[in-house]
Image 1 (cartoon, each protein chain N blue to C red):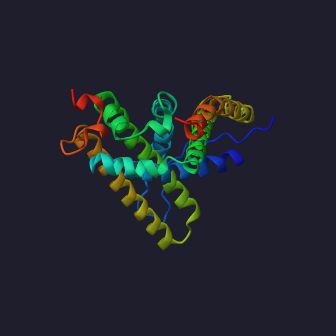
Image 2: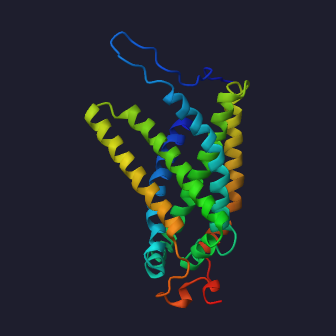
Length: 111
Length: 152
């Protein structure tokens, strides 16, 4: 139940980010200056934490999506769905442990 | 260990007496598409995040020169084009499902879906045009903002 809610919430959040992400990236077609100006406004700690949250949402949605596929197509999927949720959470922690320190170093570290 | 009811793929609704037509297999194809595109998107997006946020200088190093350097390579053009289309169809179909679930009034539901499809069309067309009409070395731009291969 809660994994289903989280899948929907993360999915909608990622979708709205995607709309903005395509629009701001499209500025490369306007001029290098306008793209760099807008991307420059993202380079602060608040947006850095937002990016960490976005990656967390994507990683959960991706791994839980694989779990949904296994529940749907693997004969033993429904039986092991709860165990697979723990595996999803474990993989989530491992992936974020690999990503977060390096990302936060980029955001908060000096040049 | 708790188990859940065996989930079933959506099936075409049976024609009801007061219905002139059934909706066919569209919902089934959508259901299959979400799973197939989801697997491909996992690979494409994890690769995208790894290259743009983890490898190299991370998020602080992203600027025009970085994007131009990537799109000078046709592999990244195709990568990003596939990601754009698959993610937009996957996301639009997901949000469509959510609108259908929660917007019970006909007017609200139709309006929200019209806005959703409009956003889909704008973003997909704009993104596709940008990937393929992009010039990594615009002649009127300062050289220090451009990728190094422009001056070579």
